Amino acid sequence: MNEKKLKIMDIGLTLFSEKGYHSTSIQEIATEAGISKGAFYLYYQSKEDFMASSIDYIYLKIMNRLDQISNEELLPREKLAQQINILLGYIESYKGFILRFFTESISIGDRMDSLIEKMNTQRIQWMKKIIEDIYGDQANNLLIDIMIQFEGVLNAYFKWIVMYNIKIDSEKTSKFITRRLDDIVNGMISQRETPLITKDHITSLLNYKKQDFKDVMQTLYEKITSLPIKNEKKNQLYEVVATLKKEKNQTEANPILLQGLLAHFAPYPVLHDECEQLAELWGIELLQNS
Image 1 (cartoon, rainbow, N blue to C red):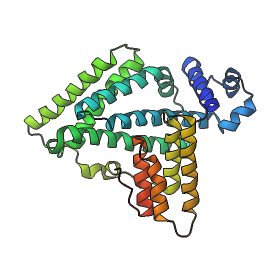
Image 2: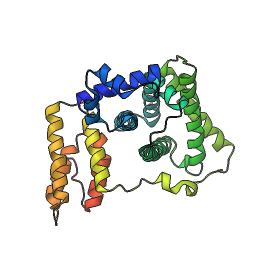
Image 3: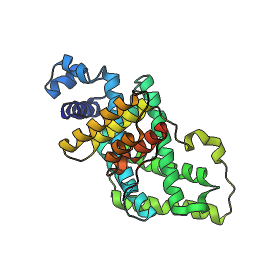
Image 4: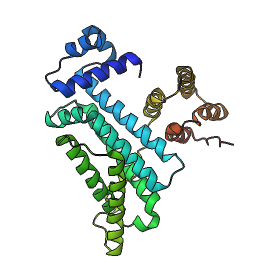
């Protein structure tokens, strides 16, 4: 996301937090950003589009940070504690906006439906992976019940922080919640509980949807934009994206060229999912790092 668009977003979210969504006009956002109302529409089609883009951008930043932790050399419990710490940090940063969003009954059209579907799927995948990494086969039969109870604990703390403006130490809280997950899992195992909900109930959510080429490329572009690297390097990666799009239009794609292009993304773990999806779509194997 370019600097100007990001500035408009930051200003708009601040105004929404202070005044409310319905009480904030596009003109106010434009004025605070030092642009004309017409210029606002160069970046966003409407206030609803602005809101959806903001939510998507924030969620992408969160998932990128969680992915970064997932790829660090840490024990699974340490990864979880750090990831919860990150989530708590974002909740604290955006709690004014979150409160307004849920108390004003904001509707932003069909795009929000697809965003919610994507966020739900990614959240479930994140919980599934971390629980399986920590507990292995012990959690297999009880996986869904563990996920439900874990999500309930997380959401309850998030709600109290937002609704009642509670200030708590995020690092201490993240470790505390991680221990509560241990209590949940160990308690269910020791009691030899049988699952209430099985994987069969939510097969579609436990398996990633196979995205089409356009969706994968859009996600790849957005993730590159959020990478903490120099603009020169970002521009190089953008050029790779453009070349991949051109290659997609060829009658017969060159597998060796595609492998070489995708190798440019290898140093960035947050881009690995998209590389694997593109490799699957093209029917090629990714080059292995030496």
